[in-house]
Image (cartoon, rainbow, N blue to C red; front, side, top):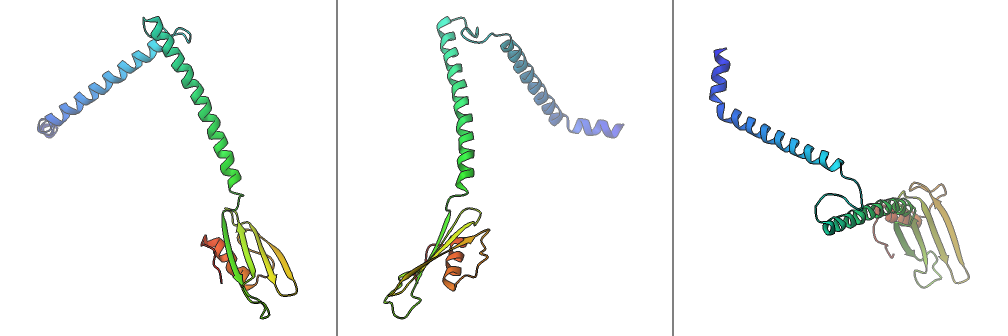
Length: 171
């Protein structure tokens, strides 16, 4: 018992300070509760009854109405933002482009492979092979960053660039 009394007397200052803080906190909570209970008895617009001045009461009522309108607008914008974000995941998010010359009888890199992917790495690879006689166009589906069909090295490079988010390369 003496040990407890010695510990209390050695720490009397911090214990008193802690008690004072608890008392102040209790006072503030009681004061807030009394203000809230008084506010609950107040009727809604047009007369809030918060002040004795009718003009100020009308101003407060108008401001509360504006705040309610802003709250509704914010909820609407929040809902629209979620919808747009969900739709945006399906938009083209990344592109990989490779230009190349597959035939020796053409003079420059007129052929290309372009990969177009959404946020989930779904999309297409569009390839064009250009020669002096014709131009051929091929389209391959991409799901989850992979293609079921065999890819040429240029198509694979375009897909890799799109998946890595790198900028388009011109080879």
